[in-house]
Image (tube, rainbow, N blue to C red):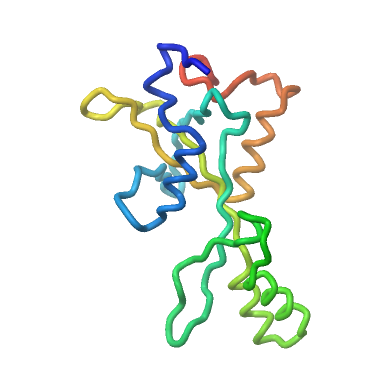
Length: 168
């Protein structure tokens, strides 16, 4: 699929490359992220690769897995990502079903947590010092994602909000 020349600089990151970046989580230089301070507002435009029908990828991870004195780094949920059995999902279910308050507390901590990731630009600061588009990664919670996803409904009247030049 060819890309409109006006958009070429804005759509270099596809969902596939976001996924590849995400698989290298913590292993190399990090890409810039959207940072919104509490009580502040930013005007963001979500970017979508023209070849994808989704504007986001989903990262599902188990956090706070108790190992010895410390907790481990987050681990990807093999069930959510690969449709394979996930040991930590099984343990979470067993701990919840045990009715033991201490095991139920562990289950609440280690259950799989979802993060939605997409490309975005800050409308007030769209380019870096070299004049290149400054594409940021936006990590959204499920509640924020749900609110944004509603605007992608064709009946919402917003049109294509991901278009880098004409989106709302």
